[in-house]
Length: 213
Length: 213
Image (spheres, one colour):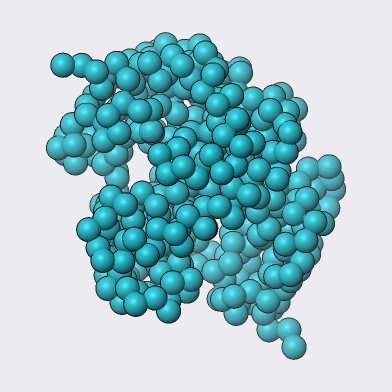
């Protein structure tokens, strides 16, 4: 059955790989599954046809036969469970890898989202400049803890897994802020993720959408 | 093997069921698994013994034999995968139920966490009063979309699932704000969750910790 994902027709990041379809493309590339892409405009995202698949009017979505999914974490987990390459075979190691997926989106990403909201949604507010360092410190706390756990390891739990895929994807959102470079171990970890052939193919595919005339 | 979870020795909510151990207790009650609880002080949460299990120094954790997990979403999913009662048998329905777990913590919870941070961490800042309505509107957008998808259904995908367990748990954090009551369908949905015998046992267990002398 054909896998069809959705992505921004015009991504707000201009093709820097920060939109959440990149995570799903990356997962599909890691497991070697071909896919098609349905591009969605900001207007169409809020219309009934797309809302039927994604009740919160966002991207990405994942459709395969009768199955329609939304939430990048759920989609990556679904891909990882169906195809070899993103989760270890050992049951305990598998549970830990899935644990890192949740840590990426529920512990590391929330203060990063706060930074995005502060900059772009509240960017014209008088308190913006004073709030940014407070948020940056909350992010640093998490990065310090994550760097301590990663230590000298290449990946979070032995071999590369869906947990690393989600963690690297979340950390990439920090690069414009400069915060990532304060933690060389994490910056190297993210660079290892970006160097994977599957990530490079996913990045190129989303960049090609942004480069259309 | 004995299941041991961790919880606050003194929960910041004073036993109102809003700490994240309640979700894990609820899941264990739904599937009928007994468990033990290790209570952790705020100081002990930041010490090496606890950080070895939870690198971000939080609760809850889940230990069973050689397996140690953190992140409430990962723990609830692990319980749901190991025991009957929290995920449908049909593969597509199961993927959708897991999708709602991710929606709860990655789409619904982030603006709710912003409200918590604004009130408690930035509660003394001059911009607090002006920011609260902005955050409340972001939460309302998500609640409106969630209410539209839930419609007249009792649960998000047919029968009660781990997706509902996480969604109700996240929505409960909104009750003190009054925002939940603006959406009667969602307030009734949350009340249905709270009325489940398993939830009531979980609530009673965490309340008993708070009520100790």
